[in-house]
Image 1 (spheres, rainbow over the protein chains, first blue to last red):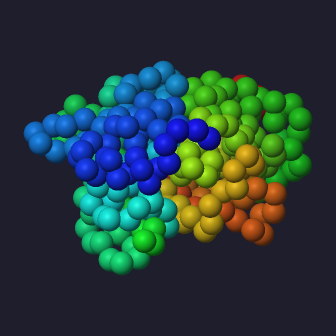
Image 2: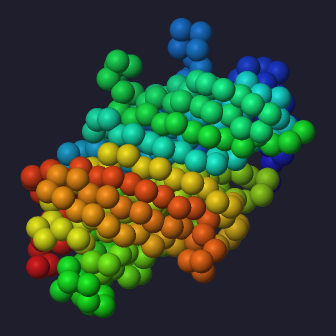
Length: 148
Length: 160
């Protein structure tokens, strides 16, 4: 593994309010084509449309695993921005609900930290494509916060 | 043949893995089935540097394991159905019991423990070598459609 340690990337991401250098340092985020975009002053995770993310080419529809990765990542990004932990949180559990077939287009996700305790953060995440009112998937995520 | 709880027929396993390769995301992740009967499915996610979630430690991203669990639970449903049909994941819950060990492949054992006309219920564990020492456990439900617009349903149908 090479490059700057995550703790350093996390500190600069918080200072700058910009997570893209951190996201770019995560191999699986690159593999799935994730990035952070700002829309109406809010940070969203975007998973760019790509042929390798398809789960059913006959519909066609994105793979549930790719949507799960986007939702889990957006939950982690929210916690990284909103908590002071030096290292990224670890996922304790994630429950993904699949609400609609997701077409092979760009998919967005936002996450809200519902409760942040000393050890655990509870996050709700939502993913949509063209219309935020028509979500394609949602997730509840419990994350274990890294100790100082 | 494989729908009756018999040991995996090599031809059937080959047909299943051919079907897996038609699913682009499964192909991109290198997922493959090692064993498949009506009792359950053993599927493998090979370790690759591009699946890492923590570049400091080399631990796999949870999202890669999510895909493995989703695919293997779905496969357990396909193999339980008398007539393969299109399915879609309704929900998937994953508990992460311990971090995956860097450089090691991850296996899942998935079973469809209840199949109705419209809904299938599955559970799975993910592990490296010993199913008794799991990395993650999962429960997934799937909705069953009345069409076969699914490469996997068609691959299994052709094999019957």
